[in-house]
Amino acid sequence: VCSNNSTAAATTTTHQHQMVHDPRVTTCLARLGGVYRDPARVDRDASSVLKSSVGTHLVPIVAEMFENNGSRSNVLVLQGTIAIHFRANTYQILMDVYLPNGYPNRPPVPYVRLAPNMYLKENHRHVGSDGKVYLPYLHEWRSHSHNLVELIVAMSSVFSAEPPVFTKRPGQGDSAAQSASVQATAIPTNGNSTTTQSNNISDNSNNNNNHSRTNNSSATVTPSQVASGAMMSDAEAIAAVQAQEAQEERRRIEEERKRLEEERKRAADQERKAQEQRDWEQRRTEQLRVQVTAKVRQQVQEEARKVQLYINQDLARNVRKMELAKEQKILRAKEQLQQQRQELQQQVAIAEEATEDAKAWIQQAKEQKERSNG
Image (cartoon, rainbow, N blue to C red; front, top):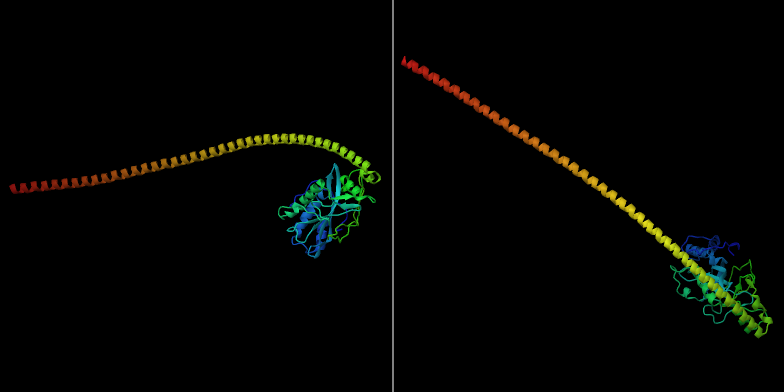
């Protein structure tokens, strides 16, 4: 194992792209070197599973993976158990989830692992005789849209509907084992049974066609109603099974009633929260409307003030231009009058000069006349 066996249980499923890192995964990847082309993606995906609620009982190890073409290589393996829910009980299924060297472009390769006195169910729709898991989720695997957390959830859902393993006590025949498989198809985790897990998980696990390892795995104890089946007659065993089934059916009905009641309460609570959200959004919308209206009004007033200021400034400029034009017109008229006055003065001076000349001529004429008469 790449680290100690203590794991912290996560309470929520971690998203595929959330940046989480588990030091155990990092240690394993460091040991593997350059097996993966995108070790950061492998680290992120594996750490997401280990830190999620569905991967609480999984640990990362380095193990050898055998390919169908005969090649083999050391890869990262998530080893441990996943939970299933069967007939009102919770059980743990032993699993090995191999991440091939082509991951995430290649899908993971999960195997169901067997504990002592446990056997694979024949002709299971999703598990082969070697324990290899076949799911539509794996067949449709896409690196950009699929992840390990959803794979674990898918396996848990499928195996809850149809468990892949069953128990058989030493000395039981096949028919008794098949009857037992109806009641205990995995490792129960309720109060009537115990599960002990070894602290030493082999670092070199083998996933070839005989993938039914029992060393260093989990020992199981079946429910008491079925564990005593080997000591009963067939009729007693059938009656016990029927009584157990009836009890489980009543329990299932009660749980279904409680579930429906919880769903009704949850729906009512969600509706209340949705109404509160709608009321809050309505209040918030009204506040935003008031704020926007006030801001628009303020902007309009500011623009009106600027326009009025511009008009006043333009009017003042026009008044000043008119005053200047008026002053210039007056100056021009004044200059013209002065010029006309000067011209008149010159004409008057000329006329006076002509008058003086005429007077002098008349005087001379008088003098000549007097001389001629004398």
